[in-house]
Length: 330
Image (cartoon, rainbow, N blue to C red; front, side, top):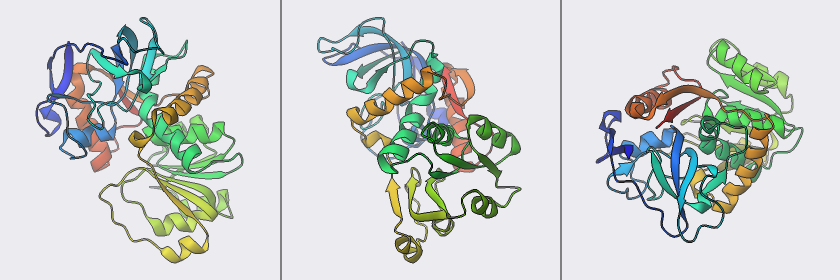
């Protein structure tokens, strides 16, 4: 089968697009004929040598996939050959990745694809969608009527947070880096989208939520806690999803006096049951049109190295040349 893989960590150009043996499903695994995958920032960190865990050799990159069950192992009970499925949490914690024509995936990580929803849509929604769901509902305990601040509402996760918060009946203000991205956030359901390059964010927040926001979602790798805690209401909840190397100052006094809480979120530590809860809601919302994937680019799998370069330029260097997800097709 064709696959995008590395033999050793390195820059995007270390990704090889070539032939590897097609896997055979074992035990509880389903063999998925892959039709779409999506690029995530964590894919680039692992490819570049982040030592989170030991990688298979060679290592196929990628976390997300969508496709059709082509064969099943003897212990599979949840799926049959021919079922359309999607999943995430592959290529992590020692598991092989998804950027290939076929992937053998434990059935516990797979979810049915709703009728009428494209494979590109579920692939682009996978990791970012479960991240948003876990953060809003498991961690921040979002309630209808809450005011939510999304610091970066046009990216993969941010756009999912905007939509899910609105579905839950919350009010959303999102920051963005351009007027075009502001328009995109408003189309996704944000009540207010603020261009931080040209507008006064603090004034917009004060007008939007005079008593402060109930949930502050941080997408950046270097959070400004002084600003964030200033925006939070009494008993406000802040969600962090990035910044493994970050060591910013933290204003303990204002934080504890407001009785705020801080929630770190790493989606790959969620259990299969927790991810299934996310997927059940996501499937329902995708099927009825309330949740939409924000896809920025669709390329062939052979362009995996270029896709990693584009993702890395925007994640690490704030290039501003990508809005939404990169989807690749084998």
